[in-house]
Image (tube, rainbow, N blue to C red; front, side, top):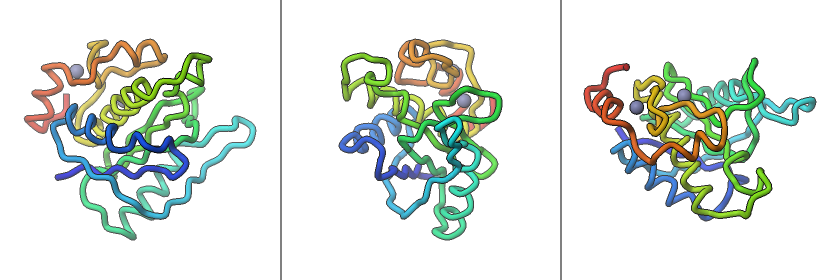
Length: 179
Ligand SMILES: [Zn+2]
Ligand SMILES: [Zn+2]
């Protein structure tokens, strides 16, 4: 079962392929970039952020129903995301419907006043994209701070993760069981 990656037209250009390849490497699954017209809603003017749940609602509805995509689907967007009760989220997955979203808004060095670097951007997008897809493939959060399935709350925690699953998560994925 291949993984589908939908790249928002406004998301950073030119890094789609490296990110897709790195996700494939981390998860050991094939990935393919897909293109469909997709409207991103859920904008909250007071927060200047998008509600990740609303985006997933539409992703589930429009795409899986209308285009009959088989296999997990990840949307990569540049919109900054939140869920109720959180200031922000890097991404969100809904395993029951096989859809996930990840935001590049906080992956660029520019957001933190640092020198922009595509390598950093690609690494972070791939790690968090693979993380959300890992949820769709049945993985839970991992306590190992170097594992892709560790839940990072800061950029430093994200950067501390390696571009791979820890042995326990790799095994869980291979067995297709939840951990
Ligand atoms: Zn997670
Ligand atoms: Zn792990």
